[in-house]
Amino acid sequence: MDRFVEYTLELLEPLGPVRARAMFGGWGLYCDGVMMGLIIRERLYLKTDETTRPAFQAAGGEPFVYDAGKGKAPVALSYWTPPAEAEDDAHALLPWARRALEAALRVAAQKQQKSARKSPAAKRVKFIRR
Image 1: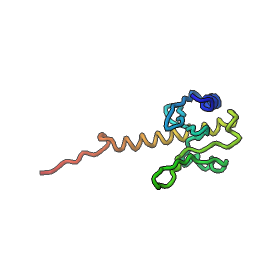
Image 2: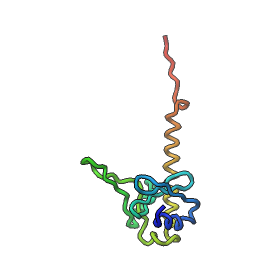
Image 3: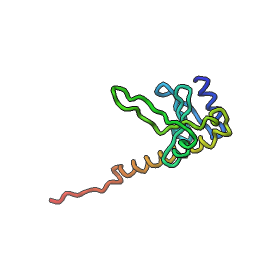
Image 4: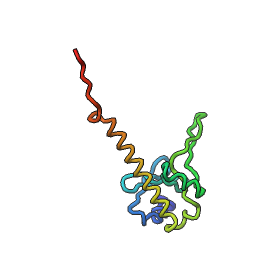
C-alpha cells in the first residue's frame, strides 16, 4: 500500500473502519460493506448521489473522469473530490466522508430494492390456460 493511501486511511479513521483494496490501478475505499471512496493518482474521490453531488459541486469538487478509449467520450463517475481545504485535515474531511458513506449506503439500498423486485420470487406466476 502506498503512503498516500495510508495517510488517507488515517484521515478517515474518525469515520470508522475504512479499508483500501487495490483496483484498476488505484484503490477502492470501503466502509460498512460499501465502496465510499476511490484513490487514483494520489487523489481522493468520494461517492456522491443526487442528494450529495450539489454540495460537492458548490465546494469546488471535481468528478472522477476516465477515458473510455477508442473514440468514445470520457466517462464521469459518481465520485468527486472533496474541497481542497479538506484534503489534509481529518476534521474538515469528516463531513464529506460522512456524505460519501451515506450516498454509498443509499445507492446500495436502491440496488438491493431493484434486485428484490426482479427476483423470481417477486414475479407473478402466469398460468397457461388450455
